Image (tube, rainbow, N blue to C red; front, side):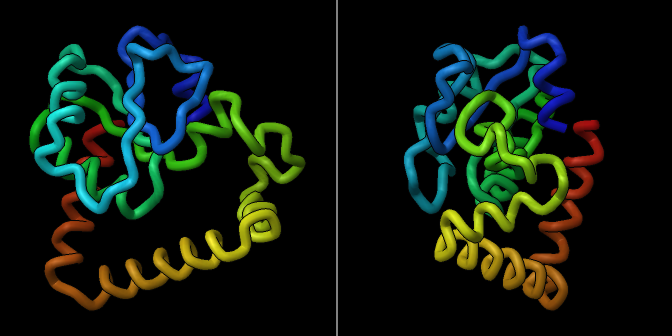
Length: 155
């Protein structure tokens, strides 16, 4: 997905990122601070307002936060296409791990586990826990279904 976006016209391609990516022009990105929620964030809302109708917004922050953020942003701007790519943004647009032999194999998580074991274990644990909650919580099931609909709408 990231490679397809990379090859598309970047006229209406914008980014919300956890870390700066030098290759992406300043007027096309917003670096988000680390915080639990972005609801009502004036800088984010200002950036969102700036985006032309029908633009594509790539979210490059950790999961599941990026999914929650995409749901929130969709409620404000349903005319935009949202892609939650996480670390793929840094990888595709020229940051760390770009030359990894495991890139694209589906096993790059092993490299992350070796280089950043605590962070990777925490992320995997959070993903498993979130999957468990989706399967057992009626509210989470509804939120997940809503996310799936939004994801299908963005294709």
